[in-house]
Length: 204
Image (tube, rainbow, N blue to C red; front, side, top):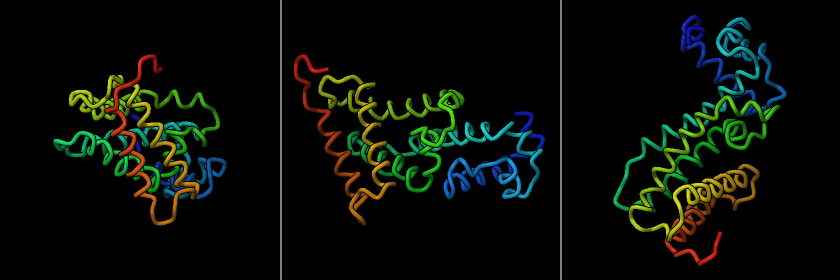
């Protein structure tokens, strides 16, 4: 944190915003310390001082993805309808991350743009915190008796997996044009309503 104070939060934010834009437009291979510094109107020394390296920038972008998810999940209001709230969280939080910050999705959630999977260790704690916020939303279904005997962790994983799959399909243009939100909403509603169906004996 001392490094960041040396150059200021505004510089740190500008560097990270520039890095995200480069990755979004041209991919990770185009990301260099020099390009980030030039794009943010500062020096390479600032990049090294604040983030340490190109890899440090990528870790911070991964952290940014999960910080976004956690903040947005926790900011959403709760209504008496826990199932509808969970669907809205998927559509208005996870989908927004995918369409407004696709580089963060690829780096933090899918790891597709990481040159080394080991870099994901740098934002594991942030991933767990964001998953905890999602788990809290799913736990409301358990309280309402709407998980059909499933565990909260199982239901959370299934919900997360569907969101990630829908995001990948939308970014590849595989959802009907102009109907992307409807597809998300229908798929998530079907899944969440299905949670209430009692699990058959012997089901994994």
